[in-house]
Length: 136
Image 1 (cartoon, helix red, strand yellow):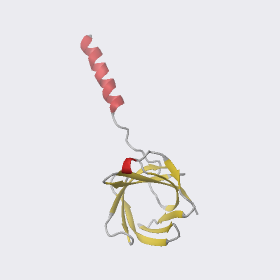
Image 2 (cartoon, one colour):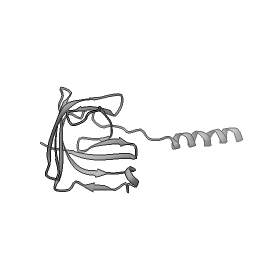
Image 3 (cartoon, one colour):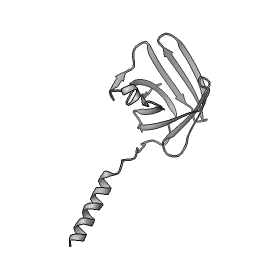
Image 4 (tube, helix red, strand yellow):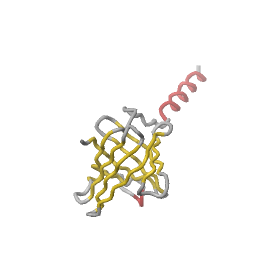
């Protein structure tokens, strides 16, 4: 009886202590997305708070079904247009090749529903998150 009780407790511990995997509602990110918030999380001792995108900074990205993307950034009055290719690796890993980057970006989609897309950028210091909403 004591062994059965111990086994039950251990089973309960293992099931409740597992890290929950990210589940994506949609299977595609195709469409236009507008940046609305950022979260510096761990980067430079970040505070884990979502911050609204400032008025003088905008970012919009359109993921096309062809595997290409168009990205428009306004970095404080300096417009930038980037194009490139994208594809989803296993699970929720997004790989982007951009005309504005010299290396392939490997990102994580940490949340995706019909109303929100959160992309995680991984750096040495930690994770930087961008939250997007669909736009026309």
